[in-house]
Image (cartoon, rainbow, N blue to C red; front, side, top):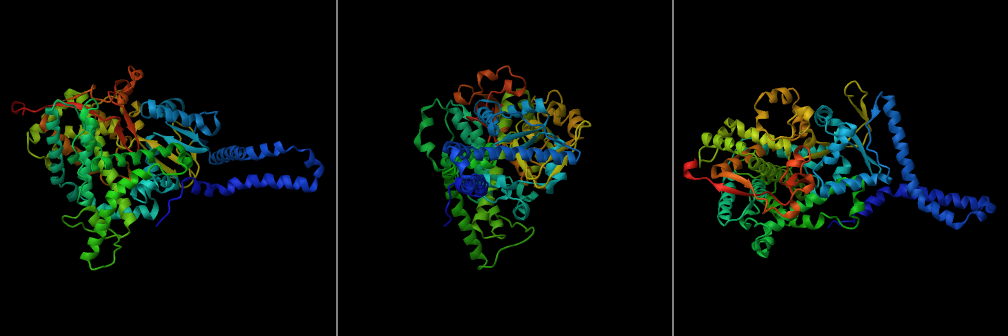
Length: 601
């Protein structure tokens, strides 16, 4: 059995030579003075040596940082380039920047600090935290280089791997090189057109969710649309992946915080709810490590903050993986596994049934299915949640979309793939939602080698040193007025249908990347579109009106009063968008709905 070391130990062991060397140097200097010049040693007080020992390590760090900056500047000049402009911070190790990031997460609007720095320094700038550079960008040309044209020059990198290992393991989102290619080749065949267009699974869970919606609304309560979307996608994803789901819808829907039923222990401790909370908390804990870079173990030195949550998640996943391996061995009389290349997926197979033909390594299988579950659940739940939010805030868009649904599909029939292809406004609503509220607002790569990013407007290129983290934000890029027009922060699905599509997006497709791009583009992109489309169609067939319910929204999750009147989207938000690995609405999205009557359809 593997023993989990406290995170601080491997962190310290890796840096031990750098910690010991300066202390050893001071010790050797003292002994040399005592041996060869005792008269000098006699007049050096002990407190001076103590101070030297105490300050030699921070001095080494400071000098090392200065040397790295000098070296990078020299290399930039050698290549006719310049360094990326840096955020100014006079505190040691950029602790002031770190403090502002932590404060913004608690009290601010998503990405507003990065937006402000973009206004001051440009769309690409350097943040140095704990003596580690991070080149942040929201420039589509650079994001295209990172994800596509210079794909082999970037990777997730060892820093990201260690940050996410306790959550993602060696899964497809946390691997590079041959391991990434292996995971990708295993998973690709399962996301064929035939698999992702099979809507019977969506139908069962959507009908269950909407039935519960009706019942709760008839009780006179508001409902949390984010919770419903998360339960629908979690049950769909776990059945799609494992052949058995967590039955989160069976736990029932939550009540508003003001209702006595909201504190019912039978509900809060239901196994499906415990699993869902643990799943979300593990993602949050892992994502927050990114603020500290490679030094994140300093914030959780003795125990991984993800550990208690991941035990709950694995208690669900591990028995299913073990059962799938045993089933495969029994049906193949112990034949060896290890297929290479694409394999045809058989009728009725789950993703896990498919994967066990490639490997019987329980950890690899668990990691891969968990990675796909995060993608399969969270991206679609995010899209449904924020689409519902936007439709509640824009009644004319709701009316127009509902008319399209009733015209193409009718009031009760389940939609087909052909129906969805004809529903241009539905796709525009989803795309506009993904533009303003992309499921993954921030992502990151690490440069494998030193390289240049081309200069803008006749300026010299930027020099990017090797092994440098390069975070990027499609959330910011999707809202830039210079890329999308002066109304970039307004919700307007028609921008994907009218002349603005050809003016902005067609000539520059990398300004819209809700599912990433390049070789690592999301395999489940069409699956997410289909699932979100299916649920929204069923929802609008059933309800003729959606309104926000501010009185049901938990007070701590409402946007602060100070936001009112702020420029852009921030000043108009009725909920508090936040993000871990993916975006979500803090405290949920509480709404009321009006059930469709016969005369309305």
